[in-house]
Image 1 (tube, helix red, strand yellow):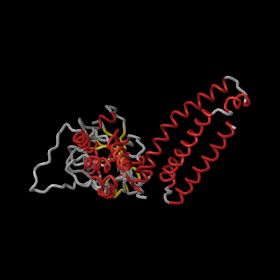
Image 2 (image 1 turned 120 degrees about the horizontal axis):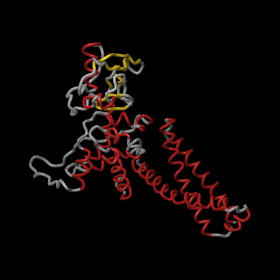
Image 3 (image 1 turned 90 degrees about the vertical axis):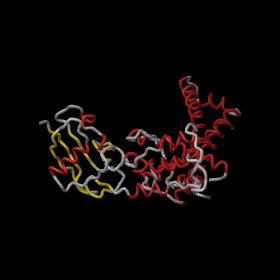
Image 4 (image 1 turned 135 degrees about the vertical axis):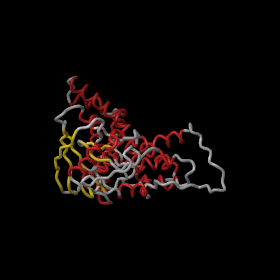
Length: 113
Length: 240
C-alpha cells in the first residue's frame, strides 16, 4: 500500500477511535465511581452485567477502540523516542493489538457470561 | 553607560558560551548586540543576516532559550529596563551548526522541495489570466500562510522535528498548504501524496509551538490541519 494512504488511514483511525474512547472512558469512569462508592460487591456487579447485552456491546466497542488507538499511538512513540521504524515495529504492534483484543474481549465475556 | 551581559555560543556542535559586555542602547535589537560583538569585540564571531528589517529571514537565533528573528526583537522587550539582566544567544535548534550562530539551512529548504513546495503552473503565456476571487475560501487560506519568510523559527521550535529529523516540518508543510490552495497550480495530487507520507503532515502533534513563535504570525498548525483534512478526504475518495 502507498505510504501516504496508509498514514492517512492510520491518522483517521487514531482520531475516530479517540472520539469513541472519549465517550467510553467517561462512561467507564462514572460506572467505576458509582460501583465503588456505592459499595457494590463483586457479586453484585456481576449480577448486573451478566446477560446484559447493553454492557456487553459497550465494552466490546471500548475494547476495539483501545485496540485500534493504543498501537497507533505506540507506533508514533517508537518512531520519535526510539527511532524505531519499519516492518518489525509494525508487526509487533499488530500482535500487540491482537493481544489487547483477546485480553479485553476475554474480560468483557467474563462480565457477561 | 549601562552594559548588557551577553553570553554567546561559540563553536559548532561542541562549544561553549562566551561572555561579552555590550553597551545598552535605546531601541537596541538583538541583532544590534550581535553585530556590536562582531565589529567591536571579536571579529571571528560567525552569524548571518541580510535585510535587518524582517524580510529576508536569515537572522533567526535562539535568544534566551526561544527561537526569534533577531533583527525585529528588541532587547528591551526581552529584559525590560533591568540593568543586571543577561542575554543568552545560541544558534537555532534542530539544524546543524556551521559555526557559532550560523546554522546550515540546507535540510530545512530541501524539505520544502520534498514537500513539493514549489509552484507548477498549468497555463502558458498564450492563455488568459486565471480568475481568483480574493474572498474565496482557497484564496483566504492561501493568503493566511503566504507571508512566510523562511526564517526557520518554526522549524527550530518544533518538538517533532527534534524527535524525528526526517519530519518535513511546519514551514515546508505550510508552503505546501498555500500551493494546495492555489487554483492555478497543477500538481495538487502529487503534492498531497508528498506531504502525507511517513514523517509528513500526519506526524504533527499539534503542539502549536510553530504558531506561537512565528514572527510573521502565521499559523503553520492551521495549515497542517488543513493538509490532514485534505489528505484524509483524498484517501476516502481513493485518490491519495
